[in-house]
Image (cartoon, rainbow, N blue to C red; front, top):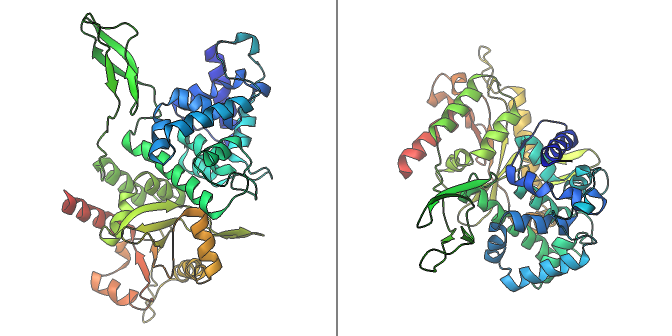
Length: 424
């Protein structure tokens, strides 16, 4: 089986498992190419970690920035290799398994062991693409289900950073969540990190075309230069992040004007968080999509976004409804809000009231590292066109409690454009 056939099968199995056609990062394909060489044809946490740090040298750097020193990373790698029943070796063709099973790798990374899918799985489904960092987040986070830490990677990293590594506790849950968030920063530093990158460079004699990636130290050639020196690049290359791109404004305007579904808006704001950060005049520092507050026996409390404040890291709550939803009634002498708006606000109040219970607040903090108490609730819905004027909108919205804000999608655009002009 050649590499082209292997890749084709990987893509086929990925799309089948997620029941949709995904955009798949090049580097993720490179990692999953190790599957046919692993015992059983699928990758466990040790396999995934070994292949990931080999394919993406930036990962160990991020781990060190998260407080895991280089010695601990090496110790973790050694421990994982000892635990592995098969050491990954892509040159060992005798161990190649034609019936390799990506489904096994995905079940391990995004399943909870009880035929349920994790939050990372749902995130991938919503955005329609899968990355190396999604895979690593899945492996690190999947262990949080249940009382025991049930994968070697999470346990080893916790052990080598002086955390409890047998049972989940508040401290190590917070540590893993923070670690995942730090790894996610890579996508902001280098927005094309999932692609195979190359650099055109001069080696002192000829121009060369070499593999390249942000973060880490690389020697471009095995041969030294004529003077005996080595051609080394330090990969602390930071790609400027352009926020409020005109293409993003165009995309949001298109969604508003073309009857887009809620999940399309959800995906847009996850990819362009600055539009939500601008809602409160720059007082938000981060957004957290689809955070599960409570899910049991058919009852689900999952706001679309938690909006983290810059000063104290307490969160507000934001929910999305359709831009096509009419906000107010237009009957003579009965110009109030439509029932669907009151229902949406009632749902937001349910989320808000959940934080009145101290046990719930502590649970939220343990799971996410975030805090919330009597949060402001923001409903994004409808159009400014539903109002005759800004004065009427202010008058109508005055019936809501002060912690409730109803924001039409046009207003999101206006605030983003204003915020962009102020921060230039």
